[in-house]
Amino acid sequence: MAAVKDFSVQEKLAGLVKLQKIDSKLDEFQILKGELPLEVSDLEDEVAGLHARRNRIEEEINGITEFIESKKQTIKDADDLVKKYEKQSENVKNSREFEAINKEIEMQQLEMKLAEKHIKDATEEISEKARSLEAAKKTIASKEGVLNDKKSELEKIIVDTEKD
Image 1 (tube, one colour):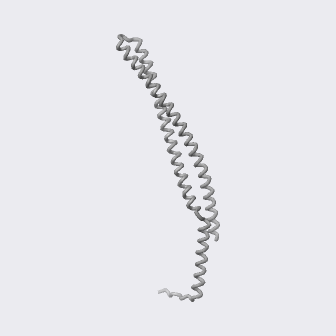
Image 2 (cartoon, one colour):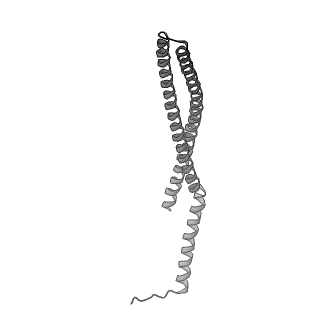
Image 3 (cartoon, one colour):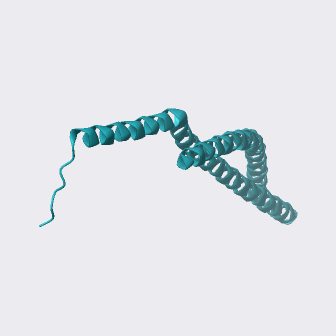
């Protein structure tokens, strides 16, 4: 069994004073750091959220672009059908067949106009999303700048306090 050393009252008090000084120094370091670690953490979370928002907007823009491409294809298909129906109308044998072809031509023309309207609306939506994306990118850049400043400030404080 190990022998337990008995300290005198003076040694105990000296050890207690030394411990108190160390504790006070740690408190000073904590005060020096202040809310900086929390601010850094909050900024990191905010930047991550902004990156997620930017990615979501980019995905929405890609989806709208694909929608526009599909509508352009719809217009092309409808135009091909109109040409086909106009060619068929030259070989019509009775008025009922002529009216059916004319209705089909009219339907395809309406389909083309509707697709053009969808393209116009989607283009406006893309420009809106592009503005949101640019705003998000600017916000990300500014927040990342602030975050880097805060991180470097925190690192400097940590390095200074580790010396002590």
